[in-house]
Length: 424
Image (cartoon, rainbow, N blue to C red; front, side, top):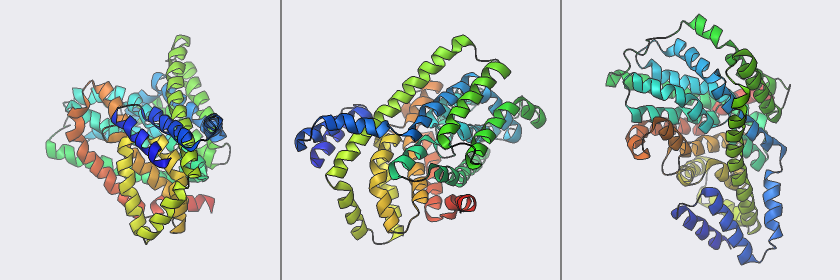
């Protein structure tokens, strides 16, 4: 059964069938081969999405779209530019910093790519940066949308591995700051070497004026994250609060969202949410079948024998996840792999929260690596260029994030120090 499922899934990938459909077809083949009642498919697919924490996904997606249309994104860009935009290479640094701030409320890297990229990619091009560089920078910076909390992949990992989502969120702060800081340092040095961005400070607002304009936008992450860590509401409830706040600010305070804008915003959010939920449903059925076949236990035992210590295990898992992330959508990979790998990680004494951060950061790299990097497609759409044109500019960014991943993997306090301070 397992062989038939894997062959079907890989064949689907080879034929460029969507990830969700490939996984679903593989699961149906597994049901037929093993003579399982077909009603199991309905039951398991429904069970996979019938979980309260998953309600946060459509709300965070909607919040991101409301922020994009309601003027919150543009004001965050101006605020970030007022801080770092005055130096050579300040505009690329503004891109990274804005994505870090936007990530604190969006939870989605694709939403971050569209919301911030629509403003900054044209601005980077106007300031003389090559279009491929602008697109690669935006795609990479938007990856922070799933690392800095709140994060949709962290919600999925928490559900799949039965780990506290609140602990995962706070554990993502350190790695997010590390990657964001490393990217800002890299683009600053790169621009000085290339001679780019000497006039990046043109049109920059003063810090005070930018802060005043972005005050309501900046208050949003404070309310969301403060409410979660202060115990006022759960991560799922925080997503609804984010929608309400973004809607009120966009319609009443900034007045950039009209009644006629609501339908396209809701439609876009529903489509994005349906895609993710369809992936989760199919991946849930796939995970049920391979668990029923004993695959997780077999893999776990094999890993315990082959990888004899935690250092080797983490290195092997990172290498495997990096390759898997290139071909399988992040949500599907987490739902399928987390139940398999987390028990093995715990066997080696690795904190499941730390392991969850490693998985999320690693698989987030899949969003910026060909052939199925969703951030790349989004950035190329905004920049109006083909994917092959940005590969050369993308390699240095991937190497920077990979270096940060190794540091996060082998220095657990980066993830766990803040978690231990708050929860223990």
